[in-house]
Length: 262
Ligand code: ADP
Ligand code: MG
Image (cartoon, rainbow, N blue to C red; front, side, top):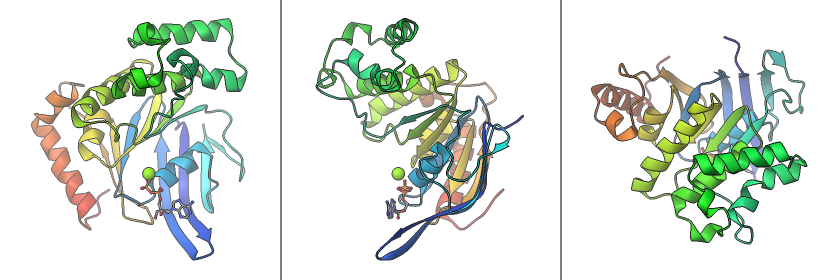
């Protein structure tokens, strides 16, 4: 299968007056259409940097990026893969209603057509936020706000969702439910997603494949496909399976030790 996006031997360093901070070191990875890929790594290792390179927000210092098989010229964002970005904080504007928040991307793109408006209203209905569309963000729970942030991202119909620790500000209970909800929504639309997390459990319960990054500068330590013989269960059920334990122990060893597995 042709990858949606392919990174080959990507390196990146931040430069400032104090010197150089290498953040990414020789990273090669593919993102396949329709997959849910999780990337885990220690805090400060370069995860957000990697996502910014994938998004085309940062140009790598060396290496190549292929977009649906075509080499991207340096400093050029990929035009054939539309990207939706979701961050740790939901970044909803308090002075706008939920509805006016979720149409923000469409407004900015000048694509607030009748068809797109209908699509957004349908998303609000599908994800149980329609009754709250005229409320302010502060009137919603943390989980509802994250769903609103997801709908705002979905409104512009991205091919690839980039999720940078979107659940880490939620309390544990909410986090389990919201992360499962959001993963199901993304799966049901056949979209491709890259989820950054420092939580191994989250990666194993949500993703089809997990990449483990080394400490900074981030390199890929291990890549592991995640399969459960009974198919996708909800995150709590998954945590009770023996496969989950196996994946967890294995990835934990890779994450914390120097063991390198391919
Ligand atoms: P992660 O998301 O894994 O926590 P980041 O990708 O945000 O890590 O950052 C990787 C490293 O690069 C960190 O050591 C961080 O301090 C450094 N860094 C991030 N952004 C900048 C920047 N704009 N200028 C200089 N250093 C940066
Ligand atoms: Mg980060």
